[in-house]
Amino acid sequence: MTGSGLPALLLTGGTGQVGRALLEAPPKGFEVVAPSRADLDLADPAALEGWVASRPWAAVVNAGAWTAVDAAESSAPEAWAANARGPAALAKASAAAAIPMVHLSTDYVFDGGSDRPYLEDDPVGPVSVYGASKAAGELAVAALNPRHVILRTAWVFSPWGTNFVRTMLRLGETREALSVVADQRGCPTSALDIAAAVGAACRRLAGPDPSPSGVFHFVNGGETTWFGLASRVFERAAASGRKVPALTPIASSDWPTPVRRPANSRLDTARFTGTFGLSPRPWTEAADEVVDRLLRPADEERAGA
Image (cartoon, rainbow, N blue to C red; front, side, top):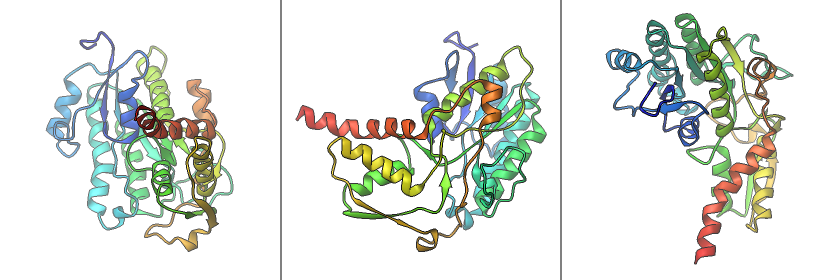
C-alpha cells in the first residue's frame, strides 16, 4: 500500500505512449508510480533492485523499450540493452521480491508471413534487430519471473509521441496528397486500450486467484492496412471541417525502409479475452477517439479567438 491507500504499480517507460496512458488514467484500484530514467535505469542493477524492493508493489509493469525500428539496425547494442537485458534484470529483481511482472512486447517477433492472425504459440521468427531483441526480452521475462504476463500488441497510436495517426494529421496540414502503404495488414491499437489491458492483467496477477502467467495478444478489434487507417483518420478530420489530402495506395516496395515491415501484423486476442474478461473494442472506434482528441485543442483555440 502507498500514501494513497491503493496498491501501487511500478512502471518503467512512463514517457512512452502506453506509459502516458497509464499515468493519465491509472487502472482502477491502483496507484501508478513511474520513476524517471535518471532514477531507475534498467542498466543499473543496484538501483533497479533498490526500487523493486522499496515497496510491496502489486506488480511491475515494463512499458519501456527501444522502439525506433529502423534505427535499431545501426544501434544494436542499445536496442538489446533496452529490449532484452533491461527486461531480464527487471524480471530477476521482481521475482526475487515475489512481485509479478507485466511486460509489453510486439508483433515484430514474427516474420509477418502467416496468412492468418498470429496465435501466442506460433513460432517466433524476427527479421530485424528490433524484433530479435524483443523476442529475447520475452524469453528472459518468462525464464526469470514465473508470475508474468507478456502482452504483445501492434500498430500503437495515441495522443502522444511519434505514431502513425499523429504523423498523418501533421502531414495533412501541409500536403495536398499523400501516398500510403496498402499491402501490410494489422490491427491498429490505442495506447489507451492497452493501458486498460495492462490493468486487467495486473488485477489478476495481484489478486487471490492463481496467476495466469504466459504470453497474451492484445490489439483492437478488426483489421486494416496503413492506407485504411489513414483513410479513417482523414474521414474523421474531414467530418470536423478540416481540409484533408488526397490519398493514394501504394505497395511496400514503393516505400523502401531499412527494415522490412511485416506484411501481416494481425494478432489473435481470444486467449486474452478468455483469461482476463476484456474484449477489445473496434479499432475504428479507438482511432476516432484519438483523432477527436488531437483535433480538439485547435478547435477550442479557434472558438476562443
